[in-house]
Length: 317
Image (tube, rainbow, N blue to C red; front, side, top):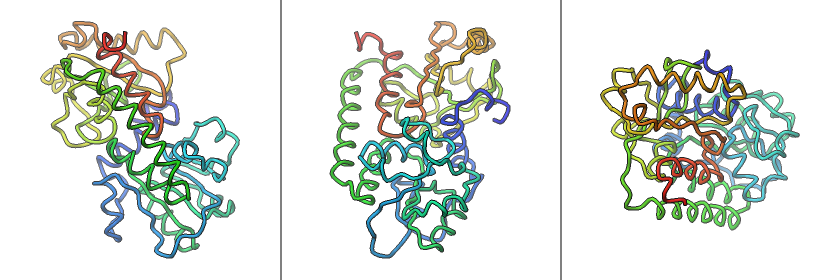
């Protein structure tokens, strides 16, 4: 994946890393606390500290999706540090950036005197250090849309914004239900959802399997995932497998458009090497840009709608 990351925004790099870690186990899953071990299966987030919660006043978030949730539920003023991958909302650009998924700067985080640190489930070493320092940890793993909604509500309870979080979750649910109603009853094209590949080639291709928020987004948008039977978040298919699966639609997602038109043209032309695919033959290869497509937070419905509009354009006229 490294060769393709030169053009990727931090949001996409972060999601790619998280999906690949969850799929391959590159970093260990928590295994000591039974509640934490369930995070990968249920998608719910868990507080690791056992003592009676104290009011949360200073938060460091190492997970961009949860940073967005904090701001969406009114806890943005309490955020004092974010990961290197955070770029939304704009207010985070003025905050200290304290490392990334694989290299959180725990020393700098401790100097920010947080009373809550939000981590990804694989960051077990950092979690242990924060706990030893007496800092509560809220840990999370990507899962499906239901997990996004549950995490938003749980986060609100944790930071004293229960009602605001419930309202934000309801708003997201309503927007998703509106999309479902628009595409209901329409044919569901067999769709390949691509979230990573090397520039201008089909090498290093990673696509959504039948688990996780990307697959749920595709389902909500009115598509049938061609790898829906593979119950993993990430699949690395061969070109021979793609020919067998024969997607009718291909959707590539990225956080922002390529700045160079020639580069974008060559990226699109790479699919011509598989000209027999129905999606290529029928010119149904779509490139969608926007970090709401790759960050499973409050703006997720915008990403789902973007997918639905290319899958079922008549439903949005």
